[in-house]
Length: 454
Image (cartoon, rainbow, N blue to C red; front, top):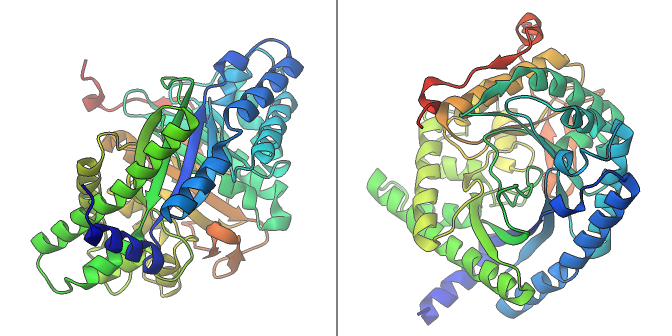
């Protein structure tokens, strides 16, 4: 039973500490929309999304009113489109028509984003995968709400370096296509290793082929709540610190579980998972970097940062799995630069570099996220950064990702304004030494020995 003390405590988290349900994401399978006729495929996609998701936004708003819990975003994820469009799409432009259909459907039902303009190529690319990947710059520049992701590696299969090379070029091309808006198209494109099938967070959400016809996944976030709890135990030892984070994560996850179950009941769609991720926003007091500072660091990036982040991530997961039997997605701590004012401050103070961020991704939930780099960075250098991050995920049997933004016309130290939840970011310096010959080799980096567990 929930007692009055817990009700008051939760209200305080919401009103004063930025606790929110970051997203209700409705996953929809589009496998039954596939076929050889492109116009028919587009028609089926539009009809299915608008039919299944017609009440999603209204339901989210109703839960928000009834329970007083802020639900920031309502989103949709769909089956990777390279699978859905394989029979019908013969050119990149054919795939762009599907991107536009997804955008129209998202607008029709009123969601913030729709994810799943995706390809899964960890072992190799089909002709369809290549066409979709080549269409990404055009698709993201001509749509408003479509998000794209490509999974180029896994612990079981290794890393497809042909895809890594191609995506370095595609990211630069996407930046060029959207240069009038500070290359914002790249903020809607994520490159993954070990991408989960049930992640509700954009831009990496897609509806995995192992999922049912439709499912409700909820993402909860509360960096401010964790920071406030740690303020009360300032100076205490690590046991007290860990217990405090774990108990706080438990409470936050219970809120997500409540919302997920209610949304599932009201929509008549099965509940999938709760993703408990400390996902920051530009709002004051809603920062993962500030949690690290509260743990005892002058700035994120100082010696000890990776250890502090590892501790935080582990305790968040431990608290979450006690609160819900179905914790999934990414679940842990995100470290985007542009979306976290504490991270921005650390970069500007010189405490946080791209290399230190890479080290931190070994122990956090995702990877190099929302990082602005100079627009004249070479495609091979971007591919090298992707390869490094994919290797971390592959070897450590965890999800890693790269969402990097080469901002055309901007250089180190410039500030880029993305607006909204995407925030703003200082352009970070990139190692200028070449990896071009490494990237040009092509082929596949094989899976590590510990992947052979059958």
